[in-house]
Length: 168
Figure (cartoon, rainbow, N blue to C red):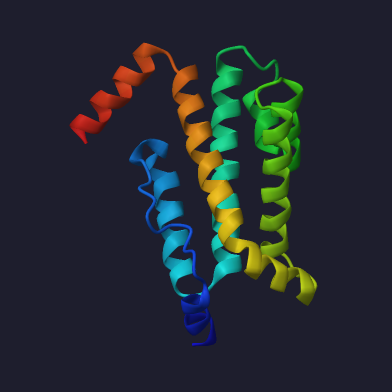
């Protein structure tokens, strides 16, 4: 109950007023929606964790498509074994993200890990205070990576996806 009442004290709800595009992918959309539901109940750290999980999922999809297109010289099997940290570093090494994006994504990764693993009480309290900003940053990176993923896909892949959606 305390978490629920705490949620009323936060002036800026990072999800309110933001219309999330559904073209971030169905699974990603479900994760973001779940993060919103949890945030609205006052579980700010859990919401940050879910948003970080969604961002990692977007990064994995983006890297996978770039491997398939030959823009990254690793294999899908290698990708499956990489940590979140390794994935972010590959994006930077391959110059698929800027230094600024690298810093922002590493910051989100740190906050996700703080929320998902036993942490010091001070770190959790700081994350609770900063959760709104972390989530907004995460949403922006998810949207950006989803758009960039579409740019990597071929026209044939895009048309096939549209047809699958129409056919259910």
